[in-house]
Amino acid sequence: MNKIADSSELINERSEALSKKNIERIDSLNTTLIYFNRAFLGNAEVITLLKKGDFSALNKFNKSYLNDLYFDALQLLDTEKIQRDVITSIFHFQNALTSYKLNGFLKRLTSLALVIAIPTLITSAWGMNFAHIPFQDNPYGFYILVLIMLLTLIPVYFMFKRFDRA
Image 1 (spheres, rainbow, N blue to C red):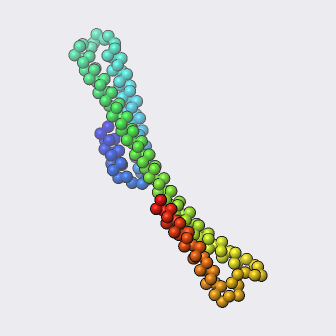
Image 2: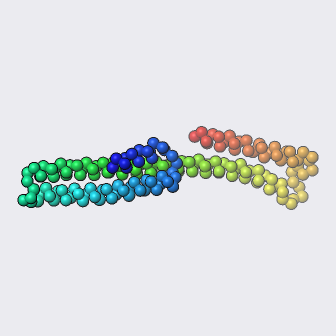
Image 3: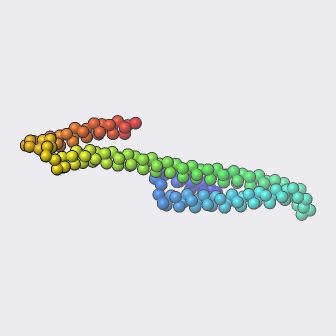
């Protein structure tokens, strides 16, 4: 139990992102605790049956040891439950941390997609085969088009900066 407690504290202190190694380690600790739980429950039931039974082999001195054993088994069950709760909370914390990082990445990816989409939309309109396209005969038409794209991107940039702070 002490080794499991030390391992869970080590994982919790690192607060690293969810990695395959950490998932496997948490799963291994959780599986070990499940086996401990089953063993402790079985031991507590056997001790309870021995306490309730009238066995001539058990004298008063041995029955007092059964009481101690029973309370030790209950304490081990409580400790095991606490460790299982700690491991579960570590897993949930790492899951939330990964979710938070993924959310931030997708927010940046969406921003980038919108920033790329606006100039693409503008230039695609000028790339169509029409007879009368604005600024077609203007010698500065290309620069005007680039200026329009930049002027539409500036408000989008500030909008994303404002949402990023929120």
